[in-house]
Amino acid sequence: MTTLVSNSAVASGIQSTSSNQQMASATMDARYFDGTIIVQKALSTLLRTNQRIRLITAVDILRGFASEQVMQCGYGSLSTYGIGRDISRSDWRDYLLQMLHLGYFRIDYRDDHHLKVTNLGLDVLYGRASAVLEMPQPEGLSGQAQRPERQQQVRNVITIAGVAYEVPLDLWGLLPWRDKVREVKERQYWNFYSDVRLPLTDLVPAAVERRDEVVAKFAEIVEAAYGVRIEGEELFIPQRVEYDEAGAPVVGLQCADFDDALTQFRAFVEQNQRYPMVGGPAYECSLRRWYQEVAHQLVQVSDAQRQAFKEMDERYQGVPKTRRAVKA
Image 1: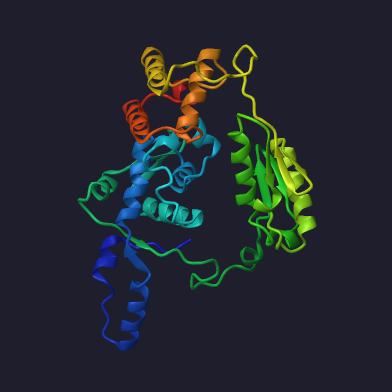
Image 2: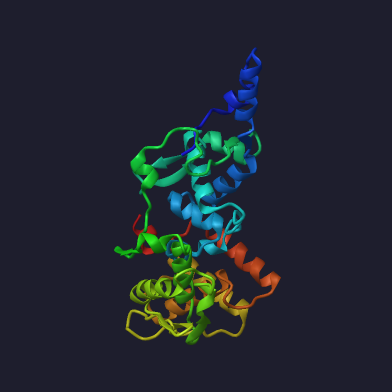
């Protein structure tokens, strides 16, 4: 965790008369930078989700990661989806925590820990004020002695749907386990059309040390969690089937073209004051399937069609997209 300072303290600098103090001040100031654009990207994301997301979902949206929450709520169609791909997940968490402490947003504990933009944050968002952030410090380089137990701690457990999968410590550093498991999850979730076989080297490169052991453990996790299989040097992902409330497989939306589908979707939202949801009647499930396909670019559409889709999504920004939102 980085040390936070107020904008005024950073702006005024550290006054010193001795050369040693001046050198220390220069080193300290070099750690800070104009983070206005980063703050604006984050706060814009909060507002575009109607301020109904937690910190982890904000990071997923900014990084362009199709998590379950992002997919269910249709956040993949937001203009800020993936706008921060150039910043690592850990750095985004660090920046967001800095923004929290600097008062740009707050956590609403009475509203499911959702993030709410403050007036101070709005000043930065709309260009009335600038923001100063601190460069994230790599683990162990914060300038303070770490506790021995924290220094030795390695989180070698991946939790999926409440089930903890432990990776042996001697294998943990050989693969970015969480990133690769997330990739399998994303591929499996969107595989609606046919069985797929992918080269195993896409996930576990041939150069990985102790590869046989790594592959065995990786297979154990993804097979149990997502129903995929590793067969030789291939990852087999079976076609994913969703079902409507009657237990029938969901089929694609019956429509003449994109404009017809868009019209049908708008009519549903206007009539029901919510988005189509999973596990509903057959027609509703088909509408939801069409929306997800366009939002996550699973089907090809023209630039004009994507713009029309985006404008529709922005028009219904405050409309519930999940059953949880409806109940709220």
